[in-house]
Image (cartoon, rainbow, N blue to C red; front, side, top):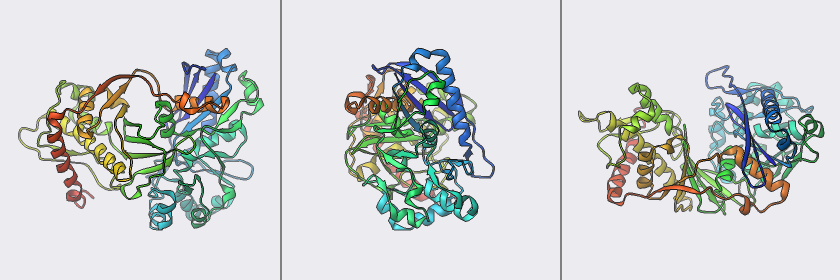
Length: 484
């Protein structure tokens, strides 16, 4: 048996799988976010340990025999969080989370230093870890002086489980301290932020052993001895492991609240200028790129709220036949945008509205606008040298056939829909636990799920969608100064 633990922002999820990668049991525990000031987002790391206890208690209650047979544990978690630890392994202050924007000035200062993009291959975003430590130094100097280690959220769970100060490359690539090509901490970038190498955890690959579970904790839940804890992965890389997105050219598009176009690479191909994330993957000698849009299904949910109906009712009005884009164009920047603009201040807009712009026309414009934002991501990845031949669609938006037809036609790529099942970050973490415990070949373990359906681009509409995309591209510079 193998256990995946995925530390999300709103919940911690545990998943037990067997040697055949069948899901045996799952359990979860909720988490809350504290927002003591505008733009702040924090969690108490002690709550993560409590949530882990709750999950393990539930699994022991429901599947004691299976839990006792666990040989490997994999960890996944939300990225970029600054968890500050003193010399006695005590938490100094609440963890500053990925969606905390207090360090936006510090992030710009670091990004203005060309060393950061040169070494990390990425823009320094406000949510990254390094600018948060600069903020702490300036605003909480006593806390900064006590910092013995900076841990990412899932790696605090590792400390609790194993006593080890350790991380892996996929998560650490989101700190703005990692030399992403060399897969090691950068002394130059640490020095710029007045940090030291000894304040960083040791690094292993995500599929390698990253500690063993404390015997006392294992005994508490009736588990055996020498349980391996794998290096693990950041949440997106863990989801890719769960989806089997590990070979160059394989990719998935996630239509969740936000959107991600994730592509695996066997070479380091940065493109920071287009706000593409270029991070290490969770397996040795692999990297990945992500184009990120901030409002995918969130855009449709916004329209549903304005219309006073649920999102499913809006897409249901469109029927099954894909139509050419009409006059209305929607820019899905209701929370700003990441790729390719890196513009937190830009806001969304409708263009081309007329007397005939009824509710279905607006719904189509929203779905198309999100597809065009993903086309932006695809073009940014292509500029970096990443070619994608097809994508697998996941997330809540993938339940809309109309949206997937529009996505395939906009991207000019087949869009696969996997068979039903849970292939997310907890499953990916469990796979990493299996690989580390058994020294297994990742290519034998990380197999893509079977495809249930495929949506091909509708060639008769490709020209119309291309023309609408070109209209969309022209709108960002036109409205940039008007919406800020």
